[in-house]
Length: 270
Image 1 (spheres, rainbow, N blue to C red):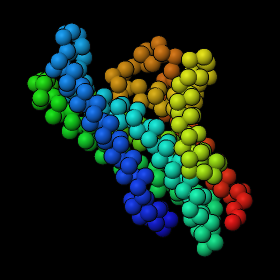
Image 2 (image 1 turned 180 degrees about the vertical axis):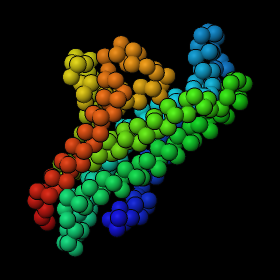
Image 3 (image 1 turned 120 degrees about the horizontal axis):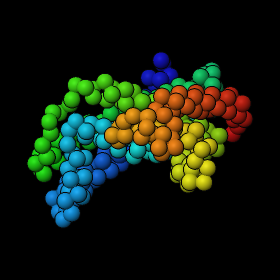
Image 4 (image 1 turned 180 degrees about the horizontal axis):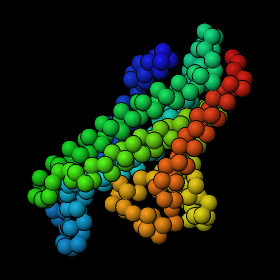
């Protein structure tokens, strides 16, 4: 806990934390602004209806969560890579080891600190998104049966838990890539490449890529975009949400293990 607390105190003051938070919140607000404008100016009735549905509760709870996790995933990868890369660039890892910290434990606590900060940013962005949806619904006079249907409350809680797991894995993957690269810029670049490259490769080998980390996150969060039920998931060739959740958890453990092992065996000089 001492290392986690120390990491959190450092991360709160890091520019990367503030920039990541502001970027995610800014993107969410811009998207909702575009949705409101589209709903007001749409000539096609179907387009106007689609825009209004996004702002209609209780569905907006799920759609906003899907949006936050989708946008926040890439930011979480780059955030984890930024934090891990700075340990090598700034020499803080070497200084901590010199003080007697265990290498593997230090890496794991670094991931834990970054994950907690990413969770805080995700929750903040989700809160802002819900607020934006409420304001947008009021502007376009979108009517809702109820703010939150009790029948869907359990599903929302489950999806919030899955969102936390998804963000944790994204951070851990970025952290591990940067740890292996021993560079902040190389880690961020490689993390982005993995995130975007997975989608491209998936066009050619969908049966294999669906087991990849970010594809598994998409399948795990399938209920957040309204695609409830295994039939909707199966038709897309994705894993079912339950299996995808297990796959994401495995990738999280693998990423943490690799980061710890690489840090334990790395040659630290200079």
